[in-house]
Length: 243
Image (cartoon, rainbow, N blue to C red; front, side, top):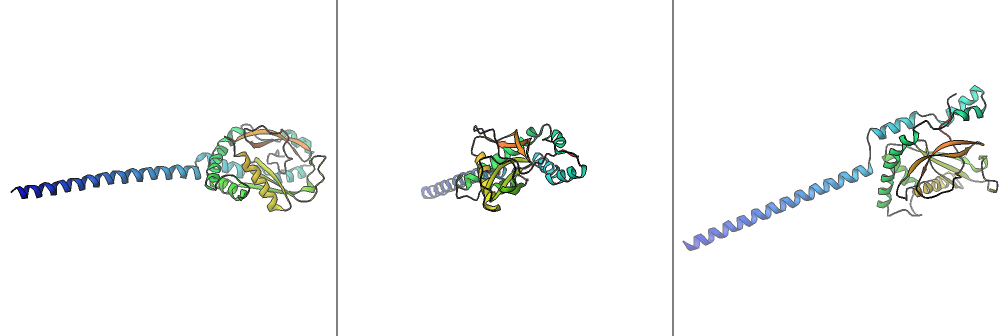
């Protein structure tokens, strides 16, 4: 009888230990799965931020006036450039409308650079910037102009060969680069643009720039670092007034 009780007790104890261990492992597995889902969801939001605000920015960027249409209208109307300059410029509220998009782009670029090992000279700066912009449901605009065709170069500039590239996103100026060809100029412009994202935040601001011999107000992306108030001359200007 004592042997039977001892065996029964051992079996019950083994079953209890087994069930306890099973319950503990189930709880651990559930916690691990829950944490993994949370991490995945957070990473997904950082890499692919989207929403009505992003979609509205895309529509505004696609439907906004472009430089080619403005130039054609200016030629057809026969009106002087000075008259157009008086009415051209970013629309009221453009800064506050664009800032949320670039806040999201800042987070996306920060995550991308972390996954790439940090900002450095050996990165493909254009591909990183392009991928981040497209993940935010927007497009990166590149404008190329031969250096010799730019009328607003500093007086001391003697270099005349090569290409200059200007980068914009959502009509906001991001950077300018110079190189022997389009690819080199684009790479330099992308590197300059990514430097802006190295600070604690980025800000869309109104700034004065030279465009075809006249001063215009432009939307530019800046960081919190003190910089010279003189920006490179604009190669494009998406805020031409409708004629």
